Length: 503
Ligand code: HEM
Image (tube, rainbow, N blue to C red):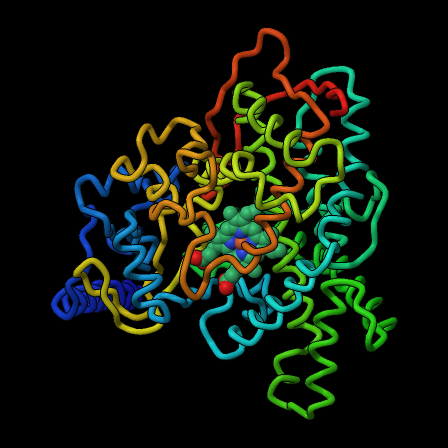
């Protein structure tokens, strides 16, 4: 008995001494960024588990400067909180910061990093990004995108027109976006209440609730061995949601594989199958190894999740601003009437909808949807802001801090689309520096070139057809609430819509 307790004591003392030595060596070897004191191993639990981490870190940066270090469990996270340090990391030292840190729940979801979003910076990741980027660009050709938007929007705008009582727009935003991404990925246009699309949407909502959107805070992520000994309820839930979601995507993928015809491109999935067929024709074994069914299914899931979550919350925020500020809404409608009249809104109108697009840019600034971006990781020892950042450090880009930096934005709380316009009401040729809703560098959002016209056309369709109001007597609330760590959504609101006179 005595010998057992002595052994335990020896073990505990050895671990503590080992950690202390490791800590001292690290501190001597590197000039790490500053941060508040914390209990080793436990880390800054009260900070990283609190809601609105992006805001909390801005408060810390007032004491510690733009580069702040926090400990999350046994690992170190570095937060970049102004434009200069973000530019240095993502653009000047781009590849250094282009990694991702593997973590248990991510590895489980991505079948060992076979995706794009969570996979680290490797030749395989680069190749998948290229293939997926090309497949997305397919939708920017000709009138493919505008036809799809038009069909999809008409379906849901007709339903909105039937609403007699105030209703939550988020329900429609979710459906519009889900149906659209479903058509992009799988070609089919489904009826508004299609059970398969509904079930995917429900699973996605459960996924966000369980997993969050940008930061991954499962207990098992900080203490991985727990998942094999006694997994938490959250871990078991995540496993179930993952299986259910992939079941749907896999079925669609194998249907496509069985009916794929060379020379016919029905959708994003066909574009991926085409890339594989090209590799087969060229006998490119290296490419074929990277284009297994698992990889392609993971890429579809990437596009589906990264595209739907961001787009539906953008639409919801846009509507909350536009319904709460009638004079801004009227200016958009004047512009749409002048540029489009009662015609069908199409890509050719895009470049003349300056004011409406400025409202969208301001929505992205003010909402800062993906507030802390998706965590990056350093792939080598590097530097930022004069500090050393060791290889393997998790780095968070505080997009919210950039978008609310008073050195760049006057009255950052105010929704003001004029920030993006010149004195003639045209979009300024370059965006303000501290505006990075899609992040930057090697990991910049893959869907930006699709998302910008897509969402602009969707918003313009809404405003062309409806006058949108808050219910009688309701005051606008333009603030957000935390949906899950890393993402704010508008506080709950309802709207009333009235058909506009055809111009
Ligand atoms: C609607 C507005 C959108 C916003 C504000 C947005 C924002 C972002 C941000 C901040 C990142 C993280 C970049 C980083 O790691 O530094 C990201 C990554 C990504 N986004 Fe978007 N996104 C949007 C729409 C879309 C759409 C529509 C798609 C696809 C159709 C998409 C696909 C992706 C993918 C695949 C990545 C991962 C890129 C990588 O890790 O290499 N996004 N996005």
